[in-house]
Image (tube, rainbow, N blue to C red; front, side):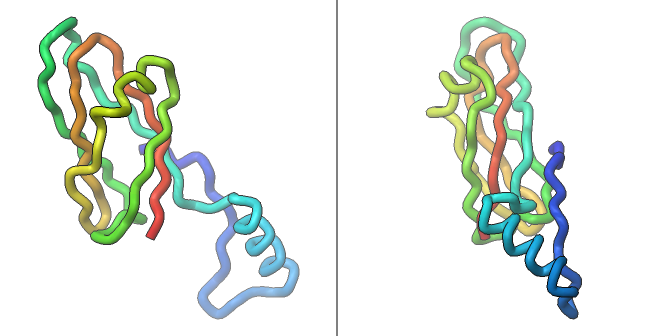
Amino acid sequence: MARTNMYRTLPYQGGDPRTVAEVVNNAMNGKTNNTGTITLPSSGGGGGGSTATYTVNDERAGFDSVILFMPLSNVSAGKLASIFVSARNKGNFVVTYNNSGSTDIELAYIILG
């Protein structure tokens, strides 16, 4: 998992008005700390149709989280229909996918909840 977006958060006891305004304005503009990227490895072969799983360790994930994917390439977009989250746990989630083909699947994801 690659976490590239790390926006400022508030300390639990609050913050000065300028910091609060910055955090709230960023959140209202969609700048939140709940995104990441993954690369699902291919089997390296051409045909087949084997199913594989990939565990994403992310401390923001939980049992009730909703995980949404966005393909980052044309090949990934073609595989999106066969990709789903098969398990959600505290601190990780499991992605199940069809790993046939010779190209890795690159996805961005967002975790809600």
